Image 1 (cartoon, helix red, strand yellow):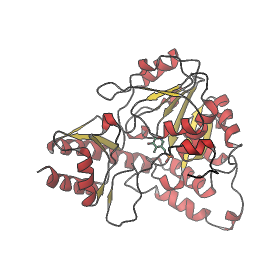
Image 2: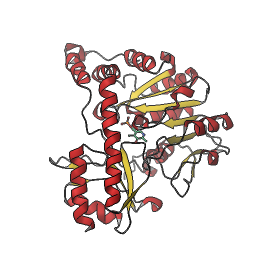
Image 3: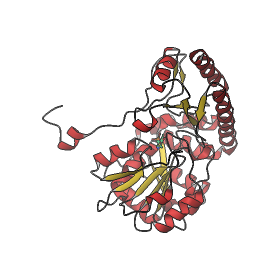
Length: 352
Ligand SMILES: *Cc1c(COP(=O)(O)O)cnc(C)c1O
């Protein structure tokens, strides 16, 4: 606290990211990072970009990256916005595209950054409860709003909303922007990007942090109608002209060019996820259906806070949220086969 803080800073309750401990040999399953490295082609691209040109400011428009994303998704460059991680893209979305005349809507169990952006940008919000099976019911969003946002698959539940439900929501909600945060879509969902041409109020965000294993480089993007993108660009150019450095741009472009590696590593994560769910069931854990690179689990007897602590003592870190509805759940990132086996080995000792 300081008397020199602005009133907004006084009241802010910042987002708390999962910890990034500096300990070797940890089985780190707490922040949904990809257990496989980035495409080797992305690493080569970074190496070639490390040269004297680093003295220059990067391209303020990151045109090369926007072009790569537009080509990959069969869009035009003016339908693409890029930012320093999708967190930054989302911040600009809250700032640029949500109305203040009515509260915006997001699920009660959802990405915990959303209420923080609301506080930061002074936007009112209402949370819409998930049903008892932790599903997003899109019909429940059919009410007056200044904007709608939810992750699909949802975080931290992993549950997926169908594209047809999203399309119905877009048809009934035409007066405000609907944002689908597809941070995990590549692990089993159908992207709403295919709907962008038909709905001028749809914005889809994605990240290269999870499925493309480039979390450290901070690369996210949004796609939508060119007028929505133009609004985001206005905010970006009023905030930071150069959010994307050239190493990130080159690595991202190379990643989009290496479809084989992308497909293969996503498939490995998906296969390990399904195997892990089966093995967890044998230890007494119920798991929600997941279309993401993590699972959301609850033990039939043991307390989740206790489990998270005991796991940590054994060098396995997972994420536990204290929110009332989900406090008996753990969110566990799908790791490599060997990490998953280490997790299961520790759990076996804890449940017996
Ligand atoms: C990880 C995540 C993000 C942020 O991704 P970055 O691109 O790394 O900033 C956004 N939304 C959800 C739901 C996430 O889980």
